Length: 282
Image (cartoon, rainbow, N blue to C red; front, side):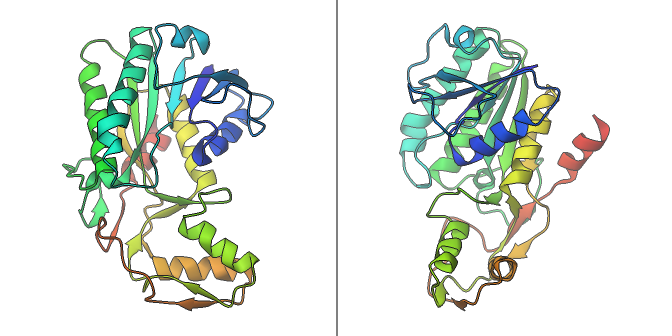
């Protein structure tokens, strides 16, 4: 089986490539990126192809070896979720690129979505819910999903929309909560400034996220929307305290020093019933 991965040099992409390399049922992995020279972070087992999704070409599918599956992780403009770039620039170029590959015969596609598609909904969030995204990033991602679902009426292809909740791990953006805390611990800081930590969220390690993405893609099925999260709600304070404990660090949490984001409800987490059913019944 031949798999291509866009966004392969990003945080998620690097872990997905490593996971695919470990799978015995994967014969060939094509990592794509905007760097004309092969990045050092691409595993040696992977083929690398320069691919600029801002300028799709009719021969892109041929250039990446006519893969059986595309895992599409590329998306620019993060972590500025409020930027109009997401729907003014990113959305049209994303669809144009994917549509070109589908026109060329791509049979299976997995795209990374986001929990921000759910908008300000609280509690356990299920794939069957009607979504009302409230920031430009969530809006653009959801619009791309809808475009691809309409596109399926033109020609058949398998679509898995992996709606990602919160993830963490080594190599994450320096602006992320996990990376900021690890930096403070590694620097020997006496304290760490954060919000009150009362928000309830759904966090999953990047390694588990990568395993789920690879497993879903390899099913080559028309799965549709599926949440990728832990299904286990936890407070931000509890999560940070667990990270501190795991590191055996002596650092004081300065609670209440940062405001809560205004684009998220106070408490939400993933329903993982569909994800578990897929892995036990397919």
